[in-house]
Image (cartoon, rainbow, N blue to C red; front, side):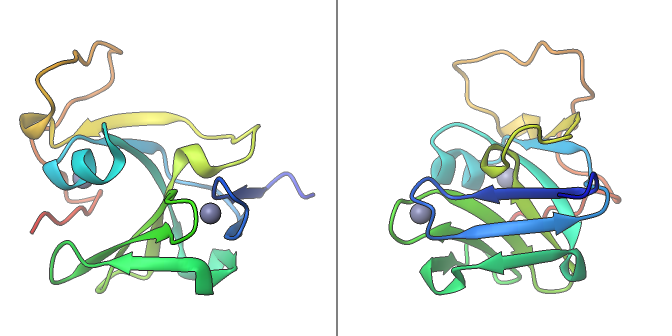
Length: 140
Ligand SMILES: [Zn+2]
Ligand SMILES: [Zn+2]
């Protein structure tokens, strides 16, 4: 496998993916949608559409939590895998789905204003009340 390639899969292995090239830093999203879907909060990188190959796509269920964005998870094992905005030519991929070594680097926390009230964020990374212009996350 090339240095620049990374692979990952859902828990049951029905969905597999392979990425090429650099991956965005990992963004931790504490918004209400991510909290509910993940059971805690979400950690995701992002890759442009042409640099990811997804196998087993028929096993993916897509849930549109907002008009412009949909959330992809494995319909067999429930693993949260993808977040896709209709207007972007990139896709967010859950960091935990990657095989190690992931090569991923933690970057920041977003939507911390909406975080759960039962944990602290104390890792020293930047914390944004909502999102940024470079990290496009659309809350419904
Ligand atoms: Zn699965
Ligand atoms: Zn979120």
